Length: 123
Image (cartoon, rainbow, N blue to C red; front, side, top):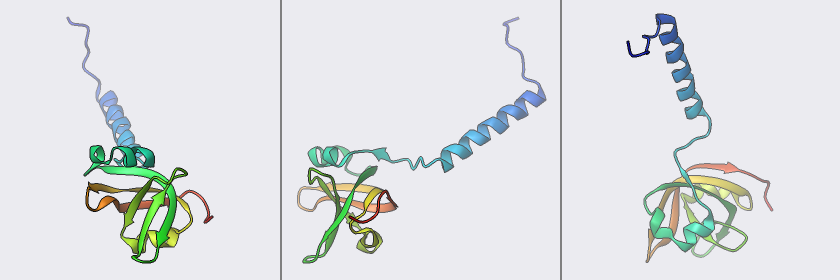
C-alpha cells in the first residue's frame, strides 16, 4: 500500500465546494487580470507593456486643443486615456484605471479603458 487513501464521497464534495468558493472569490475579489504598473514604469519602458492589460493610478487631467485626457503622477509621468467620454467625468480625481495599454513611437502611450475607479475627490 502506498499510504494514499481514496477520498470519501463527503470529502470529495467538500473539496468541490471549497474549490468553487475559491474560484468565486477570485472572480469577485477585484482581481481583474491586469498587471499593476506605475506610471513611472510605463513612461520609462512603455514597449515592455505594449498590448498588455494594465492597472495604474494617477490624477485625471485634460487639454482642450486638441482635446485629450490623461492620468499623471506627481512627477508628470502620463498616459493618455480613451475613450474620452468615460474618463471626462473624473477630471481632477485620483483614479485607478484598468485597460489595454498601447505604445507607439508616433502616437505615444495610451490606455483604452476597461474600468475606472475613483480613489479621491477632485482636486
